[in-house]
Length: 248
Image (cartoon, rainbow, N blue to C red; front, side, top):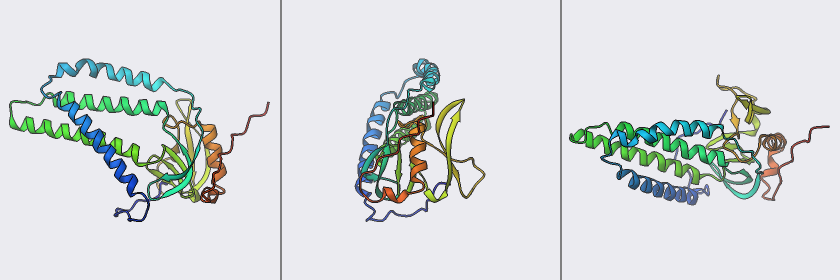
């Protein structure tokens, strides 16, 4: 259901190059900081990572159990940096839980990778080369995360071009119905039932734990604007509709 993405060079006039360059600078800075910090771990043995490696799964499990109430609202922005264009629209930021997920998952991946890399024989040339490759790979991956966070406006956006969640974009014309999505008995995002099923994958879900806007507000906004997406393209500030209050 996401809009297809052809491999091509972005046009110079799409208004996104300043954002791309800013995101590239942020990603490079993050990669340099992480690479510098990780270089100091060279020569550490496996026992140096043992305590952290054992503790992180427990921290990750506890962190996933933490679900603060999403009290944010969709905010109007005259310039929303999307995947292919800059448009006016409504934006939801990343939630505190989403930020925590990002940090804990990155720490878990980096620690596990370094623990495995510490088993490489440092006295052999191929072992030293392999460690440098692992070190560079970690720095690039973490830098990529920084790039993605700076590249787009907000975690989720509603524009005339569609619903964007992260890098994925869903066209308004292919949204047939919206409904709350539940995960382990808890509300966790809004399901977008497509008009045309282009694959056997389940209907996509937007919002949820990593988005600061609750499911009720997000569902009401998507349901409202899917019938009138042109209202988001006028350039004039618009407000997201409030969810209906249950009777009684």
